[in-house]
Image (tube, rainbow, N blue to C red; front, side, top):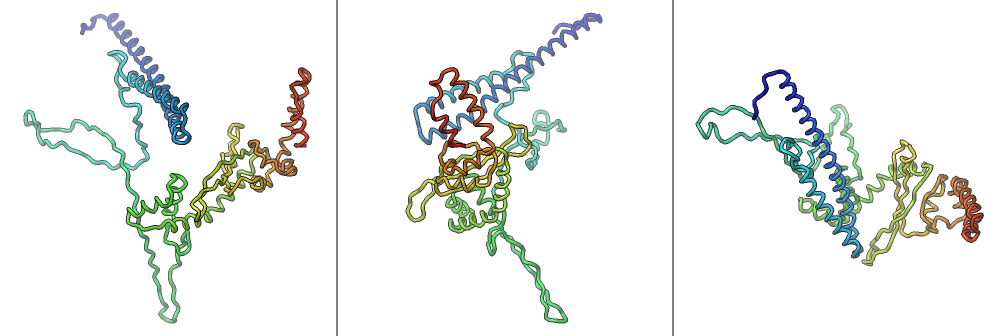
Length: 370
């Protein structure tokens, strides 16, 4: 290393040079960090796209889906290699603080932590035998899972008798989610979440609980699910009320395979989704979804669900929404001024340009809605 200058002017020039070098290094780090963040965001997007494509592949497989999966995986590998290169120091003077793996995220601070302190086995210096003194510590973390376990809550109701008469008093019976049932609220919540949130069938849950030493048959779990559905009915009714108060409603249905009892065959039922979401319009009202199950796709079902709805309905061209003329007048009462007027103006303007573009279905649709 060169010797430092002795005069003030030389020292000032050296300080300015070091400051400029530090500023260049900081700018380089900021640029690399921004580029790294962009690539990491693209990696996460590609991972989500890859997961969707793989689900499609295991559904209805096609050569196009396979080729798309290969392209996404290739691009994903390229981005990961580019991230590794970005994490390497660009020049010898750049710090290596970015060398940590970008795929590993810090564990959440709210997670409970169990600290285990490890001391060196040596009580003296292994080189010279001198005394050892504290120098610092290195901290690393490992994520562990606490296995869920069953427990039995025993309610002991004490009885007391009057010393003067024959009156007997005892503690009140604690309430249970299911009358005379042995399942507590935590167990019921676990069964429902496993079935509908984690898509674990009841027979698999029965096998899982059996490995933990608790015999719960599939029929018992099924009765619990039915009882919980009745307990949640007030919440469902409140969600329905909130959704149907929306000024605009999105409605669609999806097929659901249902097994017929005793036949071993499946039939196609329907799950109707009613969605309200006005966040794009600047509303602070939280979005909500109300689901409704029907055994088939008859038009009477959406008519019954939306019998008293007076807002704007946004749905597909399913004829079930248009079965009843009175019904469509009622549902589209607020949409007609907004929808038909632009259609009629558009029709008149286009007909003035070229009369062959306008066809009869426009007038038929307008007359039908009227």
